[in-house]
Length: 71
Image 1 (cartoon, rainbow, N blue to C red):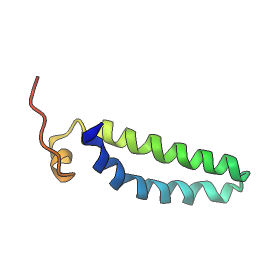
Image 2: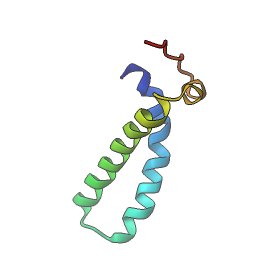
Image 3: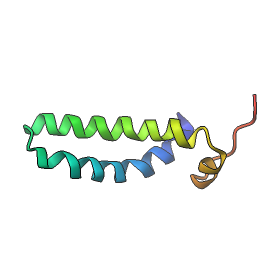
């Protein structure tokens, strides 16, 4: 997970804002709202890293990561 630190850090803020934008108008109870917001941001950030950054060389380059050696 060492490679995932920077991409997850960079991506979590836009995901947090987007999640809050769509979640807050639902007027859910506070604890449910916070739990959903944390889950959406955390899972979304890790999914973004796994699906885009980890697999594509150009995305790794854009996030300042070294390209992986083919196995």
